[in-house]
Image (cartoon, rainbow, N blue to C red):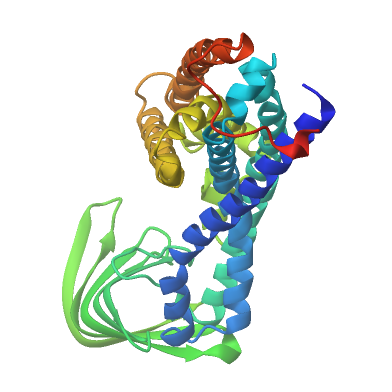
Length: 387
């Protein structure tokens, strides 16, 4: 394939790829909008802090949206070229389908390298920074960190749970508080309601519980006493070290930390699964090209306008297989690499078969054109941009 023709393919791919990155990233971002509005309106978090957290989401989003955008670019590009008759004309001129696929494969290599940098370096860094930013928000405003129906345990010595959080975020209903500050002792409080009162100057909050009971004792001895109360108050310090979540989440570990966690056997199989997850993401770009090229050619027949829907369906199938494989791998169902790499291997195999079939079909369609036979003819002229 000539350099001019290769540039033409790259230009087509790049324009559709940029559109796909913007569209898919926007979709993921819209899923967070309600949480952003809640932080701004109901939790009293400043716009600067919210924008800081949102900016850290982009590396996390991009490691997923780059392969998705590549698939959209490949399908839409080959769909347009096929619907205009340019693919058949190129085949008749002696350019094989494999030759037409090479620019997309080179583009996939670049996209895969970028995805690898994101998954191994930028995304873990962004997750760590996000944990720190959220912890900083919690240090000044605990109500912003609490979530309904979720145990919050980033404060050493405390676990806080609220079944419901009423606006403006300082009134809690159905509260559970676990106090483990004293070694060997545990106090578990259950209350109908609770109130959070900030003391920003000393980076602490006063938690006032009303109408409940407490179970106190020593877990090692298995002895607990139950006492009811009308009102109970305790100060919770928010200035105590670094966020614990970033130290437990394998997705937030750097490559070296992840390797040490695997060797030490920390986090069970989660660290090993995370290693394979990061390694498999760049190869999704190659798998999507092999599937996208023949799919784009076939999609051109009467359903060109549905290319985006076809891409969404493929992406859904891939990520369902990918996430399900990771879940099974974490649960110990076979080797970790099998579960994580199953989606990539399936798409690579299917793509190779589809590409072979599409190449054979194009050969049969192009032969009458090459020999001047009456019958099939191209539906459009070769683009002047190739000359």
